[in-house]
Image (cartoon, rainbow, N blue to C red):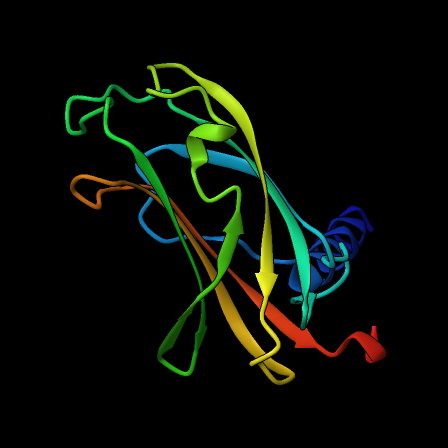
Length: 159
């Protein structure tokens, strides 16, 4: 009977995990967590972003690793895009300079929440895609942070 309870708990946990938004690390040097995207429900498999509007996105960055590989005095850039069947579409981010939110130059053991607005242009039609966020150095294009998640673009009327 004890094993039946454990199995039931495992099934419930797995079925809940299958429905949660999955954020994939795509080559981050620094740690990140607590990603919040407006339009993401805890029980959905993709975030719904509205075409023709801004979407709030925030995450916590932690620079616990040493910087021996990077120029910490370099300017930082956001490279935020939608990936649709192998084609990358860049998105506008406000503020476009990460140092308007983060304390730059970054230092070791720095932790901060980064918040921005991403505009979903009206050139897009409703579709499923992957949102990719890269925070990189401006001088050498080195990835400091990178994550991916599934999104669904929807018209304002259907939200």
